[in-house]
Length: 351
Image (cartoon, rainbow, N blue to C red; front, side):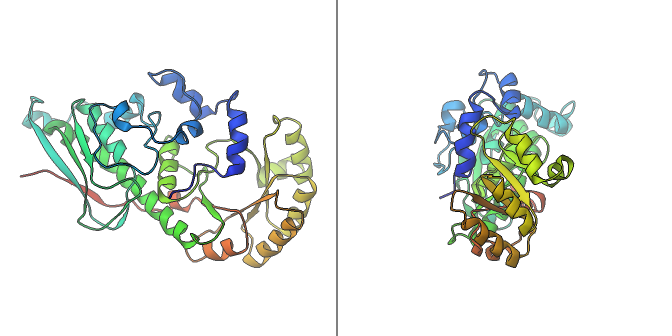
């Protein structure tokens, strides 16, 4: 079972805040979505399973997805058009020459060329559907499933020109997201038997944040904040510019709406003590040695369990378990997005 979208403390505050102050992402999406303004991404991510075939009647899906499907606001028409325009330009010279008419249909099979975790098949389906509204697809694996080399993962039926013209865009997106999901799963499995939960960060590719965070969730992480308006996180540069932790917390608390939580980044035990005295709800232990982190956790727990603890910095496969054992609540890392490799997939057409 993949964890929910946000840690509980973010989720609780976010529901109250976003009702009147939708995030920038939600505002931008709502302004271009043909269905009208949308709720905040979190509300849609947590709305439960919604039938993809209901949103796209021409795209029946045969394999149930254990996760909520890719929300419809992630792949709206302007994004698809931009991705396809980048590759197609003034048109696919070869495909248009070989298939000037779009009546000839074909079936393409996608195959995994290496082991990993699949994420993003609904994206591929919508790429092909944009080029051929009558296209159909069949998921042979579910989002989040492990695959082995040579395994067929999906089948797409569309006119031949659409399949070949959309192949690279569809594969690029799915390979990227599957690579993120694979790297996330590797980290999540290292701490699966411990209370600490893996969360992602805002270190995402501009324009692809929602998709990349979808992939980390498929891989087994929770989503950290989607943007700067999701939580009041006071980081090192804020602290330096504001004149210290206490001054930064005091000024932020005077401005943010009640009851939004405040998180403070700390790098040593002195800063942890100051953050505790300021009464913040969340303390980040950033780039601390494990021994110092253990001391910090003990100091925070002596004040009670109401303060949540997030560890961040230098989170790798060899180090993540030692960090989780210290007793932190959350471990945040950008590694699955910033350091992962694409999962190699290919498309095959019958000869």
